[in-house]
Image (cartoon, rainbow, N blue to C red; front, side, top):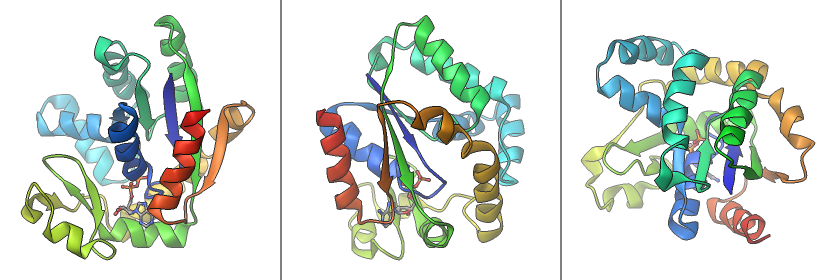
Amino acid sequence: MNIILFGPPGAGKGTQAQFIVKKHNYFQLSTGNLLRDEVKLKTSLGSKIEQLISNGEFVSDEAVNTLLKQAITHLKFRDRIIFDGYPRNIEQAINLELILNEFKQTIGHTIFLNVSRDIIEKRIMGRMTCEKCNMTLNEYFNKEQIELHPCGPEHLKKRKDDNLEVVIARYDTYMTATKPILDFYSKNLNFTEIDGAQEIDQITTKIDDILKV
Ligand code: ADP
């Protein structure tokens, strides 16, 4: 079964997804990373995407859906995907159901990491992501881990869109477009809300418990 990790930017979705990948043999599908990979390839779609991301706006549903379908239909990922940062609006949620139904797959768990905006600002302003292995650390909370990072600390980079102005724009976009889809998922039995302000390990333990069911 597949899993949806849902929550505002900076809630810790990527951080927790990395644990699930290692421990439960899943594949993390971050549409943000799929999009950033397209930007790196410097295609014309990639340059349009880059402009939108740097303004804190959403990329068109069509572009995201194309990239998403490619991943879902990949045999290696079958029923072992963690959706991290997708869906972000009702249209995407409906689209995801349609694609999964078409390929006879399901969502086993929807996990919502709930975090307030003041905590998010701190987390995002300190976020550093490894350009090689995609590991996420925080320059305020993980100083030692950054120095000892196996790929080398020089590969840990700040994302261009992780500045205060863009963080606020991203949070506002989340509140208007993404939060309403909570109603869509929270009716389901497989929906769980976790207080995302807790320590990373505490959240991981809760997610472990959910995945055991
Ligand atoms: P998202 O994928 O939801 O945007 P990330 O996983 O990238 O969020 O986390 C954002 C930042 O907050 C990162 O720097 C990460 O190291 C840090 N972080 C994540 N979860 C926690 C937590 N529970 N407590 C403290 N810091 C966290």
